[in-house]
Image (tube, rainbow, N blue to C red; front, side, top):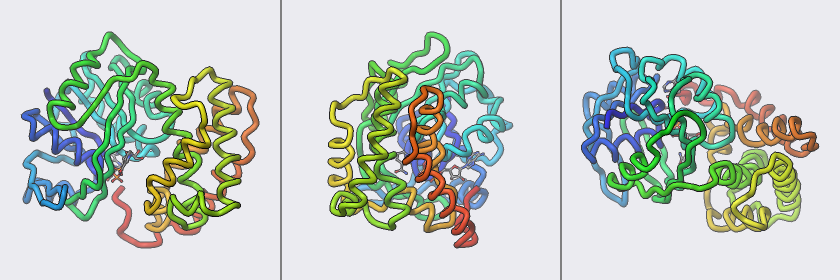
Length: 313
Ligand code: NAD
């Protein structure tokens, strides 16, 4: 398959590397010049399972020289999705399938709007990855990827899942994509902003009475909105699910907390902010998610540019 990955940070590099190793014609597209130059000069180095492996695949800052692709995988942070798709329009044709495994709600809709005529596939992934430096990432943990079609023509979902599986990225197809996305959303809604605001690991959230109460309020609002918009969550006890994920990932420093620490924007608008927007449309009040979104935005403003050079875009 001809595959382009837009946003070759931690996750984009990981998926691009595995798909290239499986024999696909993969190109990485990223605006981070030093990263792109290093990959082209030295290869992409992936630290996984205690070993270093070098993957050879081309990287570009400008996708202008690439034609329409069979598959485009979008792995920029959610607040860059619209800009990134707009600057890569030549990658899309009627036969292109576009996959987003980004966190939050709304990316698939942005892609469908900007890359009209393509088939848009969304999903979730439990892989974990971190950028260590230009041209170098760590594959922190393996996990399942689940995908489903959101919009567009017939699509070849089975082909995408089969190719991911063949390349060692365990993938299955979801029957109910909205339920899947909302299921992951509520986990992020209940964990991410609280870790960023309180500067605590995931596990601490369920050990402190006040954060547990806040988690209950955030998740409860999200659950009410999901019900109002007709989404069936993939679990019956939303708070129980979020608590169990927080415990299972107890020592994790969430990406939202890490973004704040590095003076980078967070994806809060696509997580708690999405609950607020969907709540407004459905007439469900979401005061706790609204306040928490604004508090995270305030922290973003306060910490912006804290470590000059930490921004990659
Ligand atoms: P990242 O910051 O490591 O990578 C994003 C990359 O996008 C950066 O390299 C940046 O330079 C690039 N970029 C920014 N604007 C661009 C543009 N206009 N065109 C091309 N490239 C551009 O982020 P990440 O951790 O890989 O996360 C990507 C998405 O995946 C997020 O939505 C995140 O929530 C989700 N996710 C991450 C993980 C994880 O473990 N890292 C796990 C599951 C889901």
